[in-house]
Amino acid sequence: QGLVFLCSGYDKPWLYAVKPTGEGDVTESHMAWKLERGAPLNPSPLLLGEDLYIVSDNGIAQCLDAKTGEVKVCPTPTKNSAPRRGQMDDQGRLWFGSMDDGESQPSGKLFRLDRGTLAVMDTGYVITNGPAFSPDGRVLYHTETLARRIYAFDLDEAGILANKRLFVETEEGAGYPDGPVVDQDGYVWTGLF
Image (cartoon, one colour):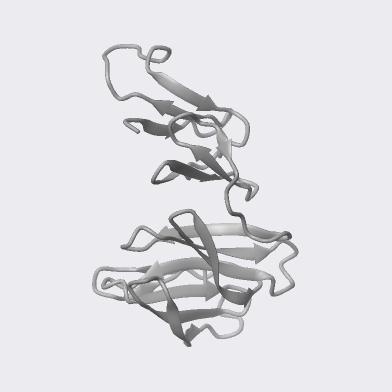
């Protein structure tokens, strides 16, 4: 697209698409498009091919045409289930979870977005966090916060999950695990709240 995507941040959230050429004040001359309605306070743009994905601060996912900024129909999670943070694997697939809006029913899912196709990869979550990947990309870690569990899955090159297993469960009263991260040595880290 030859564009740089910028979020204005707090106060008045806007998403800008700017042509990265020129000198001096290029505000008007190099602005390809600007999104005002639905732009996130916390930046989250993700470019996949010709599509730019954003998630607003209230959990509404949008898909934009990256060249024009026009809102497109994009795959979305199920009703009463807000999208959560996501992570890309080394094959360019976006993985993210959803959670029950009421934080009580296991309606949350683990999704994979691959070249515009949304697939449900696992179900039964109340509050999801993660995912994260091992350094070699062959293990996916995903958290069920309310149950205080982090699961591990085998992940193949085609993006198929297998062998779901309990990786760790925190003791009651020790806190609830947040989204995991994996360091370069393969150690899994998470915060507890």
